[in-house]
Image (cartoon, rainbow, N blue to C red; front, side, top):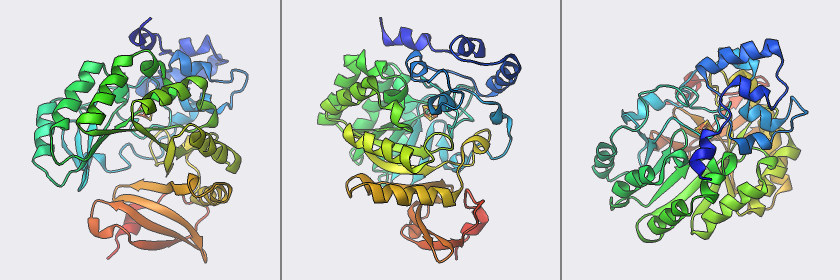
Length: 370
Ligand code: SF4
């Protein structure tokens, strides 16, 4: 069997879900309404990780629509991606970083996705002309790295991936290319069943341009035999795999769960480098966002549980103005620091905000610093 057939075999309807899980009739109607806006897609593999007897199962929460997605709280573009866009599929995010939205498809549509506005639905935001994109990057020598994301680039065929990699690999001022993909977590067969993909990545990374993979494990149970094998395949090809976790209510918002997850990642050689505060995304915020005070407590506890190697990650709020590190609470104020910023002058700047226990995000108005 080929991975493409497995991808075709994903669960893509509420009816399909209900043949695996307990979904009652009233709920079905609500979920069908939600899926008209934000479709469901769950790989058979990821489905198999769900604990069927529990409606509160964290893996279920990550992949299966929930009536709380009806809440309109939040917005669809929480990181100012529209304003970074220079042409369809290309964002010039930071001075040195370009982002390519390669596709709007994924192997599983995560319910907490911050690009919910475009995954699985019609959009004009994804890549149309790689030649023009490469020309733009070539003409901007300040760009030294490209993040290829989506959607999930690893659901593209090898030839589609190479059509992106090749023109980028000949740009002399690029130090490296990252693929942002959740395929190792939600659809590891893509990697395990296709040696040509790994071979192509090995070839490019060793002789043309260094390739990194950034994935997103959010719960310890996602580290399965198969996902571990997929990660190892990449690692054996010389690809360094890093992880960005999102702090998510009901999934990993406890000291125990977060510690277990990060320790699990360390055992498979995947470096946790960011824990993200969940963005205030429409149809995500109400279900998944954790107050900042709770986040700070969890991360402080995790820091006490891990050694120096494991706690090199940063707790980050990815804000329209940049990546803001949440350093902690001191004397009744949150202490923040710009880790990355659209305005390079802001990088390294430390600022504070009075603690409000209900606070989950920084409003833009609070960031009009000098
Ligand atoms: S795989 Fe990534 S882009 Fe796709 S739905 Fe999940 S988080 Fe979003």
